[in-house]
Length: 213
View 1 (cartoon, rainbow, N blue to C red):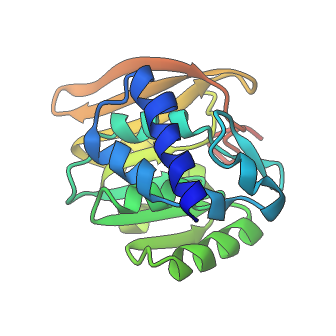
View 2 (cartoon, rainbow, N blue to C red; view 1 turned 120 degrees about the vertical axis):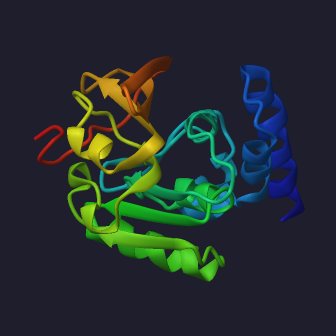
């Protein structure tokens, strides 16, 4: 266990801080959440490597830097209600749970959702609720949200997400082709949406009605 703690500290000091992750709350969450428990046993020794890793069903757990970057772009203060699209292993959900009041997370692959839900509960992340549905639809019955994070690459920004944001809410989403995207931060304001682009990235495709087929 001490070895994994050491690797987490190294991950923060060598992968996150040098690349410009400055939010101390985000860095603390990344240093706390046991990433090695969100991958299969045969990948535990690679859990803190500077890369994405497979989690089955053609899905991945994102590179630690990308998790930190997307989380930082949400600008969380602690009292927010956050929607995550693409639960996957549940790792991003766990990081978010330490930084906001409530996490609603949607996964289209039932087996991944069940596994993530059981793990999050076992590890004590009580403020995360897992749903199985088409993530491109958002979660209208629980909207509006203060922040939305999408952990899959979209061909364009689905209007459903903008509609489900509170005023001054932030959406962080990778947008581009199936094989390469750019990270966007979108803020909903009274005069319209304000869009900023961030870093290039590569995510699995966002599949669903308002994503890829």
